[in-house]
Amino acid sequence: MKQQRTISIVTAAVFVLFIFALTAAFIIIPDKAESPTERRYLQQFPELNWESFSSGKFGSQINDYFNDQFPLREAFLELKTSVERLLLKGENNGVLIGKNGQLAVRYFEATDGEIHVDKDGNYAAEPYTDSFYAKNIEKQFAAIKTLESALAEKGVPLYVLLPPRTVDVACSAFTYPKDNSDALIECVRENAEGLGHFIDMYDIYRARYDNGEYVYYKTDHHWTTLGAYYAYAELCKAAGYIPPDPERFVVHTAAEDFIGTTAAKAGMLHNEPDTIEYWTARDNSNVQLKMYVSKKYTGEDAVEYNSLFDLSYLESYDKYGMFLSGTNVYTEVVHEDGAYHKKALLLKDSFGHSLAQFLACRYDLTVLNIANLSSIKIDPREYDCVIICFNLENLITTNNLLQLRSVPDLVD
Image (cartoon, rainbow, N blue to C red):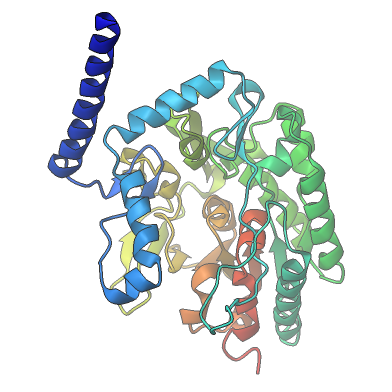
């Protein structure tokens, strides 16, 4: 009896000490602004006022704050991931764990593209699904077709490239069924009917992946430089050009220790890292390119580069940002050789960053971030061609392509 009582006292004492230690750690340890492990910003202590308290916003934010700032949080996340792997689970945090270290996000908060309000007229959370909303895809394709019609009046071709997600490409690496991927691809194909230049890459990427080609990163959601090359080759065919052979490029290894956002989401930072490459054309070795990057499109002076590649990003965890110096609203790439070059307008998300290195072999480029189109004053009809590069993940989780309907001077 005495021994049992001693054990109970010791247990209670350890528990109390643990609680006090955690409390002290919360007070002593400074809050972190971001998590290198998860590649995201962390919740800071929220502002307390009557509006935030009565609406429940403060309660939600303070809960996120304690979750994000929990002492030794990253160590516990790694421990959880290690246990999940020991249990041979095929998924962690909505990320599929496949053969040969292949990872892929399978859970996406798909938007229906509508604004939702509650009975009092306040904004409300929209419904979402880990599949997609066909109506939202239909509306965005209608916006694409509106842009295509406006461009056609001036004889400017529109090329539409909607890169697949990793889960769509690397189906064979997972036991997870590919039904949602197949349904999404079929929905996209149906809505793309009638477009003059829709570049359908889905079967091509699956076949190349299954053949062992390194077309998508294992730890990140982007295509590799080889994958971007294949997209460029198909775009050349659609535009009536003979695509250049891969042998016409010099392949440079930029990093061999790239761990991307998918691995961060899964808490698998000890996964085998990816290799980032960039390619330069052998026959353009004497052509001088200049890249001008406006960070905000607010009149701020552009940053000038002598290359499309900002290698300073290789010192950060966002190594993919080396292409076009990361995500910016407005970027220009021009040839400095004095010769005439056709002009292309690239409307893109981050998949367009690694595609740009190939487009620049042929065009002077204006590169616009689709998420910021509403703040940009530009007339696409002034270009020799317009290219849309927008990943299927963004297609189903945003309605950003609807902005194409209101590009200035094109739509009343």
